[in-house]
Image (cartoon, rainbow, N blue to C red):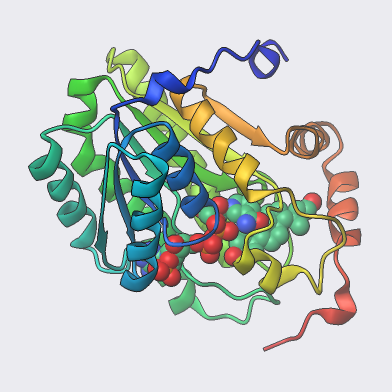
Length: 276
Ligand SMILES: NC(=O)C1=CN([C@@H]2O[C@H](COP(=O)(O)OP(=O)(O)OC[C@H]3O[C@@H](n4cnc5c(N)ncnc54)[C@H](OP(=O)(O)O)[C@@H]3O)[C@@H](O)[C@H]2O)C=CC1
Ligand SMILES: C[C@H](CCC(=O)O)[C@H]1CC[C@H]2[C@@H]3C(=O)C[C@@H]4C[C@H](O)CC[C@]4(C)[C@H]3CC[C@]12C
């Protein structure tokens, strides 16, 4: 309770002039993080697949006051791309202060249909590329005593129906990065790891995928993006956003897991879930 209710002492100046990579920055929460970071006068390197969208986000970032902003487009399905991206940061800035890992590949929202190939592909995009980005960026982050921010989901802490492949990738992130955090502390590596546990957020893609099938109102992406940045800057272990919804899910998961499961299932409009 103490950790998650500690007084806020975030100051936007903490980020002024910092060199930040944001993945999945062409839309949704990643795009909103880019705009907040631009207002805080950071140097930005943005990435996603769609060049036309990234161009627009970069333009807006420069208007909002970014110290500099550029993009590299590419797919995280391509196993060589994480290193290319980090090299770009190294060549441009000669260092890196914050790595925000936020992208996700497209997934189905329905009963698991046995498509192992899809699970494998999603693990590459949503999990292994996060590991590869971390490995490539670590020398620069050690040098700057910087931060790694990993955007995950409540679906990576408690099982939910209709998103089995996606949930697997998010549980994997927790396993990997929570273990790595221990090793950093044991080895006195002063690089923070912040795992962001998010509930339902009103990004276009999430609302399009699930609004017909889920009860409840999504939380705003702009506030969510700011909370992620604050948690990273404050070097927090985990962010829970929206706080109440995530905290109650985690508490019930530990003290009454079957009751939580029944509540989760009640959250879905089952008649609106189509089988593939
Ligand atoms: N919205 C929500 O309700 C929740 C979101 N989250 C997490 O928040 C993060 C952001 O989600 P959200 O903003 O909703 O997602 P969006 O779908 O809006 O954004 C996803 C981003 O990833 C990029 N992307 C997609 N495929 C690839 C790929 N193969 N290689 C590289 N980049 C890719 C997209 O751009 P492009 O298509 O141009 O490549 C886009 O910039 C994710 O980690 C998600 O798991 C967690 C819980 C809830
Ligand atoms: C409805 C869920 C929370 C309620 C519960 O108690 O289970 C949402 C919590 C996390 C959401 C998913 C998520 O992590 C992001 C995905 C992004 C994709 O673009 C599609 C939508 C998500 C599967 C999204 C769906 C709602 C949640 C499961």
